[in-house]
Image (cartoon, rainbow over all chains, first blue to last red; front, top):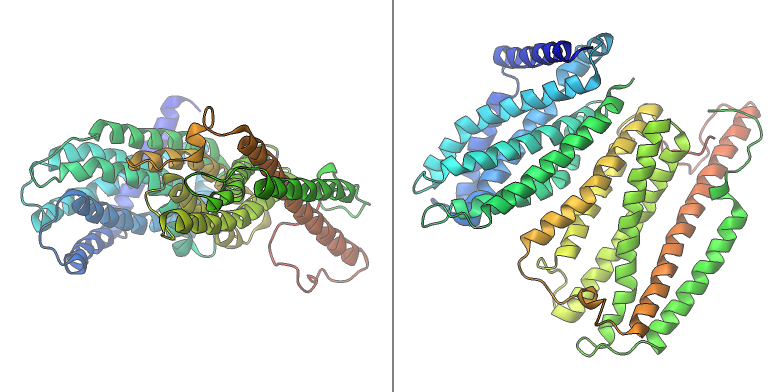
Length: 228
Length: 255
């Protein structure tokens, strides 16, 4: 299979995923609702109306991570329940095309989620919005890491008898280093005196290293998760 | 894989080699702890409490090395499809998780003795170990949630590889998150650690490593005996009802 054909297969799979999501709205609305409700719960749980520093970073990233878990849970459900895995195995496309397609779809879901939820977070809790622009870099690196790990974990969990249980159980410890990096980068951004950039580049490098390592791991192991 | 022909036990599970490592383990541990109590000097700062170092640190290193080795075995399993590597990977993780409990308990005791608190978030090595331990604890629910035998073995290997790669990354990230660095015994290993302490540490380390090997071999022999028992039962015409007490889906040596 040539690179062009693999690209076509990738595009078809991503298009199918996004179209299905646009028509059925199975994951995204739930993720958004969950995130906004979690903000409200944090407002009372912490008893704060304004957040800054590491507290703001912690609330934002915890919420995004748990909202992502909802999407990751459902990522391969249609493949399993409606024969998508068998259909994919019938095509000559290599397994990593499916990996790339699912990572892309999940990445798009997360971007859409954040486009809605991060402004709401800012309106709810932040005194001013100048930290949002540099936050985009952190969000993109985190999305890549969540998408890679989420796809691998989701494809592992979907064939088990306890999918909804296995995804958070496996995913949460695995993303701890990424969470350390992204909360480390965003805590100074939410500083009370405007965005700060203390160790910003350093933390972005750690997040990028994490993404790179799990990109290689995903590439190396994914075909073994598809065998039947 | 499943044959009823007489089995030649593989080298790793031969009872005689188990006997040799058991004796060596006892020897090293007895000599090591003898040295700890009667030869090493008292730590000027921490006194007698510091002696837990000779137990805690080797346990942690051996457990982590076991996790990494499980990842290597997992890799060999998905490359070759040989069920023996999956069995090894499973047993390595199993024994290392047991060691992990001991690491966390001895770590908490050490923290209480030297800092007056049972848990210290500022100690990056211990926190990293906790995260790694939590990850490997999910190996069991994950593995047993997959019913198909082959798929279970393959997915468990993928887990072992992913988690094995995760171990060093996690240590980097947690270490970076802590700006406070506690005085650590090994920070001065080149210059500061007196030779008596270094030698005692090495003997204890060898003892703990041998203990790990002994337990792994014991577990492998147990699995092998179980496998042979069920094979014999099958050849006697009994339905392959699992013997009472055998675990439902844990991997057995069938090779």
